[in-house]
Length: 432
Image (tube, rainbow, N blue to C red):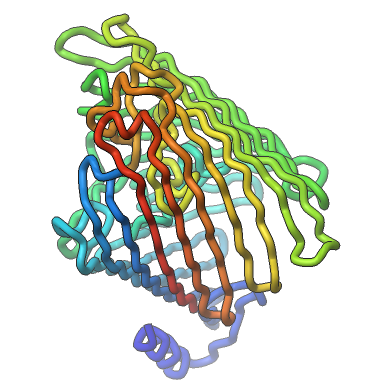
């Protein structure tokens, strides 16, 4: 990382007539050239140690601990209405049982690379790019795994006053371990539109979206086939001095094509994350509660698939342990958040989880979801999870996170051989 910084400073020293052009909140170094072009150089490094005892609730693994490294370097050039960005990444893994997973390791590759044109109200972005919308329940950058999620394709945006509309045609990037060998995943696609109306106050508004999703050889507990589903969703969100609310409703329809005959997809989810806060009290406490229902399959052989698919969700939505995926799930999670110091935040949470349908399985990550073997037809109660997560911004460039979770397996997991699970993680991140 220091080499990247020295190189960028060397460029600044060699090029004539350079002027610092970054705003106070910008990262990296911005330099303005005589011809009106602005360059911005950024670099980041993340080190993460993770420990599971056991992995996959003991059904698919045993005790495991390993380290992850993510290094990113970015150069962006802007001139007039045009912008180009190239971000290169190196990802490494050390010590994982069975070797690195699909989102753990990769040699030098293009993480993002796109061109962007923007007018007063309209803009277009073409190339490899990260994308996140709303609360990242359906489309996220997937920051928890070592390799962030990126897409190849095009996005357009039309914005006027408090209204914004995005349209997209994207394919997820298939991460491979060699250098410059990542490709678009031809077996997946994401199409659609996402509109946002901003409320009168900051942090408040309404989202409405329709997303078309395709995945070949999709696997669920009761069926496997080519998945084509459309998600119609809405989200209402508000942030006030003493309370906040975030409620999202999604309905899904589509088809799972199989050799034995097609299944009609009929799925849905309702999720909320709301809380009250006391900003004038010591440590600025916030009491919150997350409530989630994601539909599960009602019965095998009825011609329908009712399992909700969150497509590209934030894997750490319930906790950094990423043990459960939002499919065939009902959960309640009270939380308490405290700020002992302006740069220190800590959160305690308690999650109680059940299967929505007993006949369906318990689902877990990696994205989009994977059925835990043997859990279809087991009792509905999945278990309880206790978590503690703390974030500390130790300096303008360094931040640290500590995460602990204990999952007490319930009858829905124990009937399939599942066990209690301990998770621990320490993350150090540097940004320049």
